[in-house]
Length: 480
Ligand code: 9MR
Image 1 (cartoon, rainbow, N blue to C red):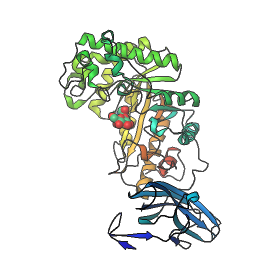
Image 2 (cartoon, rainbow, N blue to C red; image 1 turned 90 degrees about the horizontal axis):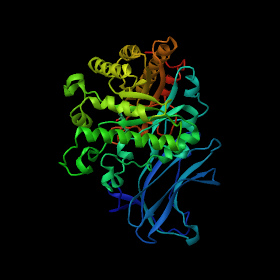
Image 3 (cartoon, rainbow, N blue to C red; image 1 turned 90 degrees about the vertical axis):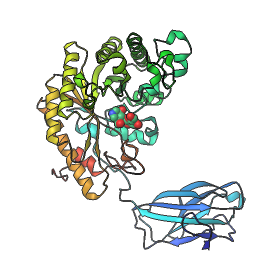
Image 4 (cartoon, helix red, strand yellow; image 1 turned 135 degrees about the horizontal axis):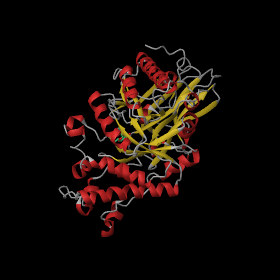
């Protein structure tokens, strides 16, 4: 142990006098680590003399004779670097020791190095997901089950779970205007002034995945006040902070051409992949105090076109969408009575004009509210309009990861799914899809490094949580 060198505190462990690459401090953990359990090991490593960088490995010595590498990192000279790994202690383990080594056998890389901040944490998750029931199978007679994913979350290692469990999906970000709009091309020629240009480079990977996996896609979203750059609304597509907004007439042309460009590309290149669209998202905001409770403050659509932008968006979507594509209005807090009534008025009008097929209820709910009874009553109300109902962005805000909190979440999910199934079974609401807003807690929009959140069915290792067993209505999950 030396002082004056440390990642944290004032001391670190110095390893010197090494004569081979595998020489390193070793700790006997035979009586500490339990076979078949999962552990996360973390340490910080630093060295001062030698090559510019070296690879360091976390190693396990089992039964005095087997060596298992379970984590590694490239460490740069002079920089404290985190080395971490996950390990499962094999069942036949009699003795187990942990050590760190350098990994450049050929060069007999025997640099001195410092170790600090070592942590060994047992994980409560199971080692493997095991044979679990499939959500899409369980609910196949009632509704399809979806999940949202962004491109970053859809790595190949996660795609197995996605296709085993789900029968539809939504792209979390990459089909939104800020992802599709092509600024350079739009400003490249004045002829595009009423015709915003689009590019699909950010979303191509997910469209290919949808096609390959044969997973129907909910299109999300064409017209929204958020994730839409201001330049779409300004004269000459100017990015100037105070650039003037265009006229209503020009904005309607931009709206029509945007919808046309997006739909025609997708329908030509990925025919049949997108089976429905959230044409307009979140147009109601009671707090803005407008007649009809339209969102005005944050919405350039409303500020330029007025309430008519909603109907126009649906009119254009109907005009350019393939005939079998279903058109939805999507919103959150749909159980709140004033908001619900405003949504019903808006949607009723669209329905009378034949412009809409369904309502999307986002359903970002909490662990206590809204009550399941309020959710049920609101769905019954929306259902009276005779439109399809999708639960489009379901998650359950929960910052407590205690066993009790997870059990409560599981019960609430179970109760909710009992209600959804009942409403469909009894023909009380034509619920045709239920989509979770994300696959795992770790990548949920609610999860922040400073305040972790646990709103979904799978944990960060993609292992099912009690909430999953609630949704599959396992008899061991009580109904509170
Ligand atoms: O999940 C999306 C997140 O990655 C984005 O940062 C966020 C930005 O607004 O949008 C999230 O998705 C939203 C969805 O598009 C509309 N309803 C609310 C969702 C959560 O914010």
